Image (cartoon, rainbow over all chains, first blue to last red; front, side, top):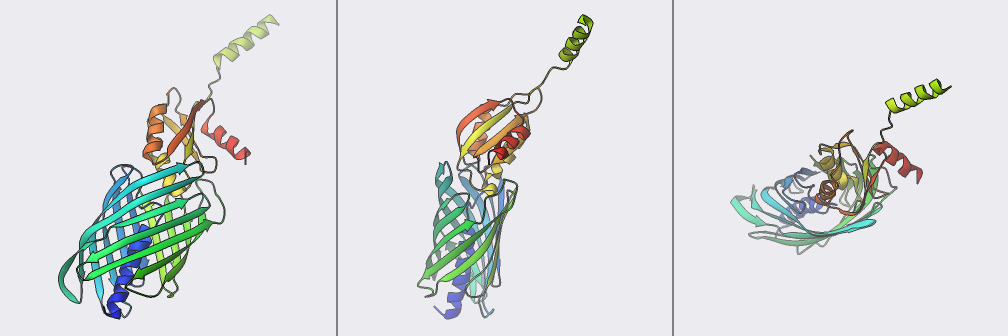
Length: 216
Length: 108
């Protein structure tokens, strides 16, 4: 695989991972959730509808560009999110999620499209002051065949009332097997409100990232 | 004197005290305001709901009934569960949401 393709794959997986590794990749029953992830080389939009308290269906669209800006990819997929397990403790919550997608990818350097499947599992634990998650996802589309793992950990500076904004510092570390020998590390400022969720960060490659979630 | 007492008694009877009624739920798993908004949104839509208050630190959801209406305990508990949480205790109190909120703040 050429270095350019590796960078593209890195960008794709980075976009997918940053949205998947959140506190909750779906809203409450009968709600719509929208999520966005924006960076210099990728733009991703996701919308899903929660059919039940545990299941959501939706769609995602990802535009990405290689670091040299020569190659682009456009991914479109139908998504399914399932809460596999939840433990509601007195002062904490732990979850296991399945996040999967089926769709197609096109590129400016190959004709037609390739079928894509992207099943993943996320495990997370949080309190009002601490957050931790691990997310693993396969990304398979013809010759594109990647596995990756990301881990997030963070803490909130202080507790707030329900209707106030709570700031967090969250750090994500991500590594992809057979794609790159580098570990991408992104410290982020996370702002949680009862109506919106925003993350802003800069990774160790000096790339800015913006992530948001909104439920309506 | 007797007339004054009688007048005062009639005046008191004409204005009976009406205490607000609320349901107070203790909820497990409620650690994130963004995730807990489902509780507020779903219960606010219920016809008997006058006001609702969520306190993550005290693990409390308080729902006040509209005047003359009764809150459905089972339905409210079901909505909290549908929002993704566990109800460990549910009690009826003769307090308004504002009073419950003030009481919880005083405990800090």
